[in-house]
Image 1 (tube, rainbow, N blue to C red):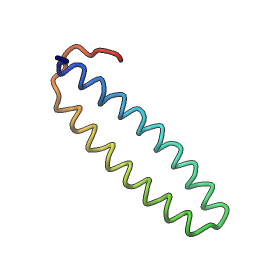
Image 2 (cartoon, rainbow, N blue to C red):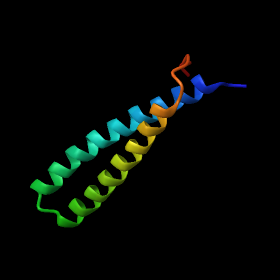
Image 3 (cartoon, one colour):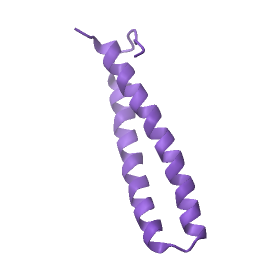
Amino acid sequence: MRGAGWIKGLREAEAQQLRREIMQLELDLIDAANSKGKGALHDIAHTLRWQKARLERLEECLAAMPAGKTNST
């Protein structure tokens, strides 16, 4: 059975992936704003807000986890 360290490692990897996605969405948002594509701008902004909220919840979860040994997968 895998322990809390393994789960925390998974959540940390998930948070890193979300940060990469957010960075890409921010770049896409700038491109959409420059291209005057208002529909795309709205969709990207909505996705960006949703991903940032998801990352915030994930970081709160990580902060509440005990600081035990983490295992890489």
